[in-house]
Image (tube, rainbow, N blue to C red; front, side, top):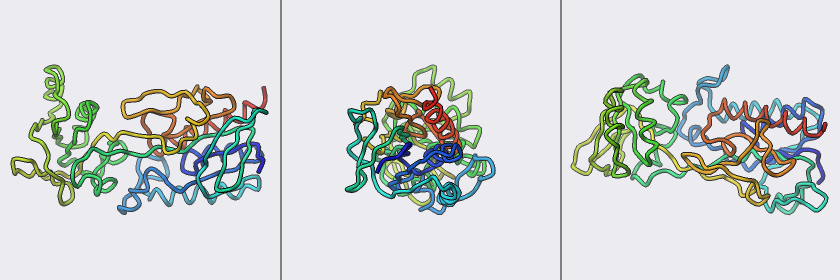
Length: 297
């Protein structure tokens, strides 16, 4: 299959990028493996927040409506499956395979997202997206200004511990991961964050933190710092340069979301240090603009 534009990833960033190209009356193929990063929120019966006009709506419903609207444009094709074996062909076109089918595109937008690696605390993963989160802007308000816990997985926990007192009474569980400096402890004290040094045994109930000394501290919700990994090897296969963020590597892009590889663009969580639904949609707009504009010069 030969197309002008291919978008790998049909979640919020990919849908947004494809929409810009469809509205420019360009032929575009969207390839989607069905692995949205925040699908755990749907599985837990939760909702997305902070996205204007879509606040408190299930992520799956937002994505499904976006796909429905996109597919109204006659120049859009959709393909379910995983993109593999990506490379730059001798003629400069970008090629990859989906199942047994070869796809060749003049321009490629990578919107494959990331997967989260959680700290190895018993009971934490089972509550991911239900009562354990990573973004206070996305899920902090719903904790009703109650008791908020932070399970340290890296020194980035200090950043969360400074932020989260705006959403509730905050306790930082160091869990043997790092030791705050004197200056960091002073900053936490100024923000009213409590520090608990006793290691965690497990998480129970909604967000009950059972410590190794037998105490249980019940929280309205927990936050942690997952390590992120690109969900697809496509960017590495093409040789795209990477940046190192506080939670993991992500694809390096310029202001119009073009990567270090010509005619290859990237957007969403795969191309930024941290993200949300609203930021992914914004990134997709810029990537769509950038890919389209690149055909004019």
